[in-house]
Image (cartoon, rainbow, N blue to C red; front, side, top):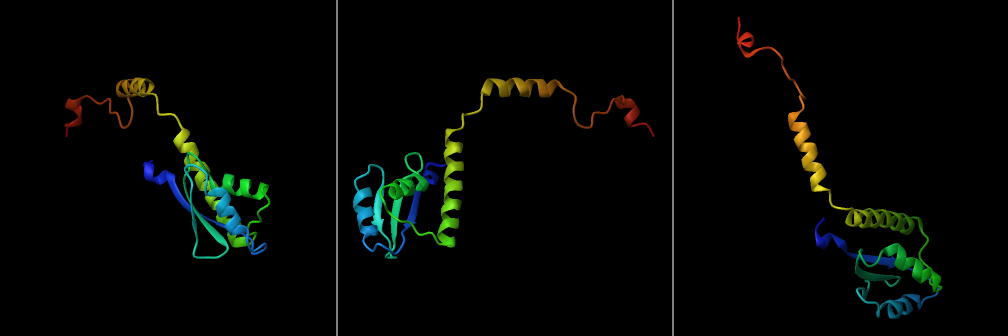
Length: 131
């Protein structure tokens, strides 16, 4: 996985009421290290840029909800939220996965090379050309 794939830019969708919660959330999140907060072109959204090694959208939304912010609960927003959560969880698991053990791989390759496999033909070479 390339390091650029770990950097995400997402939008958090807020409910329309109360009307000032986008600005309050921006001020709250603006001071967090490794998190870039910017206004969106939509008045009810907030644009966030972060690395998934440090933050996830689900974690940020859960923190906002615990502070009393209301998120958009429309079907489109909920489906987008679930898809992002799944993708970020898979990427975080892939980053955390251990590198393969080279010693065990080389031992397997050695055994595989000496093992008869595939279309092995026990017919002697001189009989193969007999017509």
